[in-house]
Image: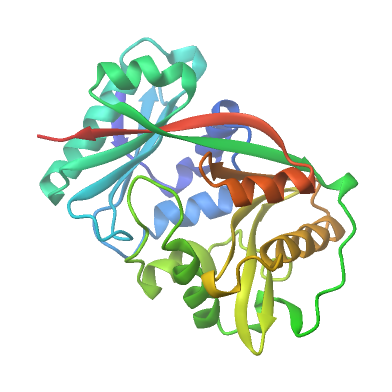
Length: 298
């Protein structure tokens, strides 16, 4: 077994591995390749793979979290090992490498994610479950009809908008998102990297609801072939309670379906009752769950 820094040419194998372990996640080869070749602009991000006999069988990323005001907080993302190579210490080695990367960055509190069957592994390594995340899927051949926008509301593809307007709406909407730490320090540079310049972002299907020239709600679509991910759907707080997030998401799903997408996936914190209700009305069905797990690093 060998733990090493991921390389751009690992992307096809990494995506195939992810599809085996997390079939409900959507990130294509080119998007993954770019992420490895051109890491996020904020310092402290790394991607690591586990290799056995020259074959990539495990993956993890680690980063200091620069999107929150919570001090010294970091993330260990998508630590997973191919089912055929488990119980051989590979996951433990990846976790040790990830935490070893974070400690010199000053990270003292870290969040990782675990599928329910991996919670014993998390607990053995000092992580305690915190919040449940629900993953859901929707077949786009049975979408509800798209209602007409209410008076004064205009639906527009985000391709027609200044990205700074979407960023401002994203920041405003994310402040009170349920989570372990607030998302209240996202820079435009980081958002541009994660969202606007993402290879998978479909700027035609992604839809904003405008009111008096302001972005009141939006739904972002990241796509890989005939699969899509609803990256973030939200209303700016002052416009909530008017059904605009549901309207924007319904419009985005219709546009994605017209462009050949057949299935949509999304995730929501179990405490996010409004968004779960929107998804239920649209016909989403639960397909998986993960738990955020927290630990202190010494």
